[in-house]
Amino acid sequence: MQPLGWAAALFMMFAHGIISPMLFAVCGAFKHHYHSMEIGSMRGMAKHSPWLATSMMFAWMASLGLPLLAGFVAELMMFLALWHFLSAEGWSVLWMVGPALVLALTAAYYLWSMQRTIFEGGDETQPPESLKGQRVPDIGDAEKVAMLILAAFTILFGIMPWIALDMMNGWTVAFFETLLIPILGGA
Image (cartoon, rainbow, N blue to C red; front, side, top):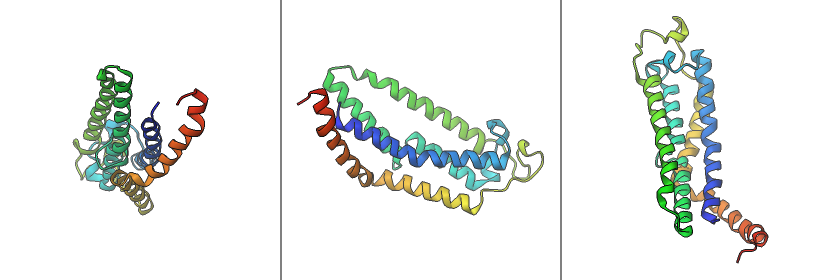
């Protein structure tokens, strides 16, 4: 066990706590405005709901771990912790292929979903089929403010992760020194 792994797990939970509310807000707005959760019934969202489309893209990219966003820092720390663990234990670094493959499959699914919902088709004069001829409103001001606040924190902790990591590092070291090492009988 390494403190880097614990700090990575803590930062991953922290980043998840910022990014997931944005994903849920996007899904809620999506359902509220489009009256559907079917990917195929919402083509061309960028033309009908540009704020919702932008928020959805940002949330997906943050969840995926795009550089300069909090999810990237968390995933990078996880991979570094795994690398250190595998090297220290004498295991093959080929064990890193599994997590990297999962990340690649997630990226492929997100990109496929974005292409289908946000960019593909969609005539700005024709509302999506899920609305049965009604024009779709974009998200409201309250939703925009909420999305912007979550996006700002995602960017802030992606660019300056030490703000949160300094607090987490103190806890991680204290946890190892006072609880984990005495219990496990380590040095």
